[in-house]
Length: 378
Ligand code: NAD
Image 1: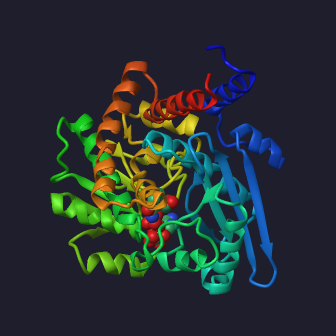
Image 2: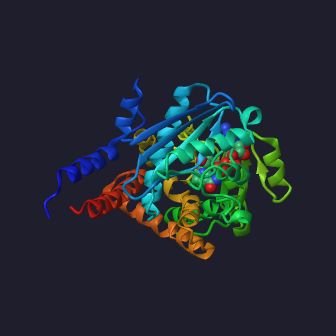
Image 3: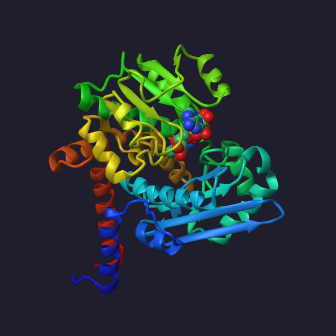
């Protein structure tokens, strides 16, 4: 069937998507255009101190979905940059995981200890509700299932709410499981065996996901090193497991580096210091510049497990909650598929001599393009 003008427009946009990086541009619309966002929505509420931004990147596969991050951004530009990058990442994450949802994300600007309150979270819930289901939220950094419960009081468009009120609870254990199987797939490629027994794995950031990941690693017999800026988080892990606490990260002798804190830790400064074989972790947007730093890792012979693929367990979990048909076995079954998808990405990357990040993007884009055509009937 001939392709419609609308279809051509959408597909041209996909082609653009593939080559975009975080823009160094000056205007909001330039940034949205460069990264191909559909919407950027701002909310301000003087009474509660709420300053929130929702980024809706792409809704071809379904409503945009992605967590809410609360962070004390130094500037508003930093918050905008974060929400643009994170929401774009969600599009690819859901697409490669085989989910029928698009990419979105929310950020709340401010110091959690100073301004997070029931009123602020409920006001945020009203904001989410005003988007009428085009964007569904969930928890992310500095947000808990309890916080989501407050958000849920004002809107049904929220997932990751406590099990006690009909939700699926904290998605972090599922995310951690996906990271673990993605790490095993990478080990199979790098070492010829998926076993992590005896491998030195450095987990940077031992919060929700990092700590569950450590449970799997210890159970499998890996040698675990940990690093975190928060003493309490370190204490919680050392009380449970025999791990080595390290003050520095990138110059450590290790087999596998697992970034589970914040993004952009793979950059010009850190990559030359790394002596590991594999990078596989939960953090979003680990590559500071996805064009440059994916190549740098490849050139150094370090196998990079694409973040948006191996941390997709959390979105798989909340997707099933969103459908109203939550089934934990099914969630884990689909999360386990990350192993095969990861092997497929690595093969594609080898075949085409591209980075694993590019190969994963291509697979995600191919799915959006194919389903977009089906939806447009072209
Ligand atoms: P979290 O806030 O529970 O844990 C993050 C940990 O990193 C904290 O312990 C914090 O103290 C530590 N940290 C922050 N900056 C650090 C630094 N510079 N050096 C060392 N440690 C530092 O968050 P989380 O839910 O575990 O998520 C971790 C990462 O995984 C985030 O990037 C998040 O976006 C991503 N992620 C999480 C999920 C999920 O299900 N929670 C899903 C997908 C992706």
